[in-house]
Image (cartoon, rainbow, N blue to C red; front, side, top):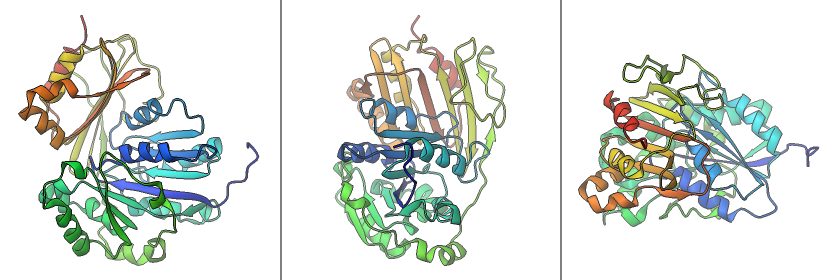
Length: 367
């Protein structure tokens, strides 16, 4: 296997805006993976603290033929951290996969990702198959989505548009997505609706139709608005917490400091992110943690926590958090159980960071 030549690896981009259900869809695809195949997954996150990789790894522990590489800190095609080619080459060298899945951040530039994959170096290595764009149609009434360049770019490149989370839709949501797709997107092959992340593996097969039009579409579209900035500031709430320095390339791999906590901040594309890593000996009180999470007014939250009741994963959208606020009984259902968790991590994406969050989060630690 180590001498296997990398050639024409079937490659799919699984894209979608914040909270569209990309990670859940990939987890379902992995359940359908042929047992003898090796799959590689390149995961990109907007926040500096990587959580998606931890979520995927925690739920694929028993599958030795799944390889995951994470790139955090903004759009991986232009990140000041690990660049996409470096991360991709490392992943391909280690995994020598039968299929490659790429999950760009919901605030990344998918056309730029396609440009990298289509360059001369990868022409013989990768075979670009269908690009899947997931959309939670409940967000189509929100101008923060429909007027965002990246949201519309994700539709522009889609071979198949997938309406996700249909079990939560209102009666009019499906038709709203069909109408919006026909208005805003180029011609796409199909529109599919799924619930609970149950993306059929058959949707991956077939060549993408987008690369043939790549150059002309790039010239016509408003693309690559690279206004995201990595920012890291000193901490006045807890001075023993280490705030990562600018352009720290090894944030997610480096050892934790003596305090057992690292914080990082990022901003761009109209959003901000803040995240923390906590060492394994810092145990959270799950009831307090759930109350803290349910109190947040944010766009996106992902986390894995070691708590007094076991290890839990959190994968919540703004709509989810509103539902928890309106139904206090649902708080007991926040989070899903994990078998293993090496350390606690949390990443919040929002319009504006609230400095009080760190104090509240630290108060959730068990005494």
